Length: 290
Image (cartoon, rainbow, N blue to C red; front, side, top):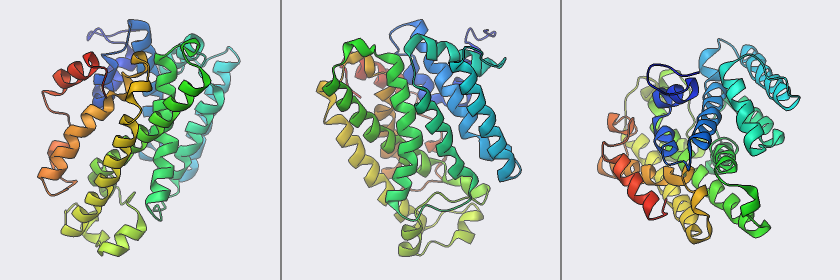
């Protein structure tokens, strides 16, 4: 099903709500892969927004259970009549996506309903590994044929997805800090909040502060570390697997903005990539970089 933009329902959803990943999809090897990436990312949107569209945790758990049952239906050959579910079913069939990966991806979002703060950076990285990194792993399952990989290559690709996914996830936490604060939610590590003396009342008033910027700086340094780790294996990654990893190019742009604005998460320029992003992505794709 397409609309007047020429995009599928899932493609239009991602263009509106996850523009960074939408841009990377433009460099998929063909239309089928691109459509299946849109389906995967639309599925992510449905899961990720659970805590934002429900009024209480129990309702959120019911919503996540609906998606578990939808995944079960896909693997039983009986996908539910839902545009995202039907599109995801095609991706599963085309690329042999693993049910356990999809189930665990849903399970990871239960944390969003608990209204707890990660105790430290390790805890936060564990969360983004189960969400952002696992999503990236599923995306590369779509972009590369398994027959093109031996066991060692698959292991290396897993390491790259883990590092790049953690980097992108942490960057997302920084960029979404104002959004979470508006909902009286904090994903910043508790030990950094204590160490830097962040006044959460000020944060919930949607005001930046030097303390918040210091925490953002610490997280940005972690982002850079994981980006470096992901790129250290670049020469061992098949080119077809690299389009989802182009998030690294966009991460560089956001890091530069953070560095130039004293690491302030409330800077509105962090909301969208620069107009030059497409050209940078194109050049990186030509050079097989991410």
